[in-house]
Image (cartoon, rainbow, N blue to C red):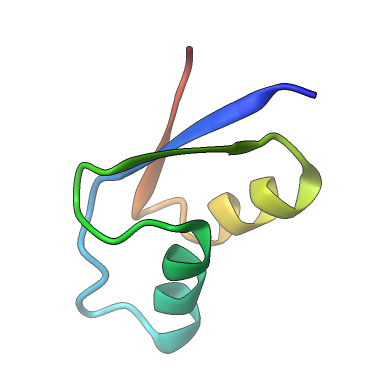
Length: 59
């Protein structure tokens, strides 16, 4: 299965608790940090939930 790279581009300040928890569960802590995860339905759903805070980097 392919991998997906996710980058945190906006702060979680002002976001609700569920969005903050989702960003933390993805493993993102600092703005500009990039993580690589399996490209599956669970990760895609998490990214969609916080789409205004993260971006997908195409490799």
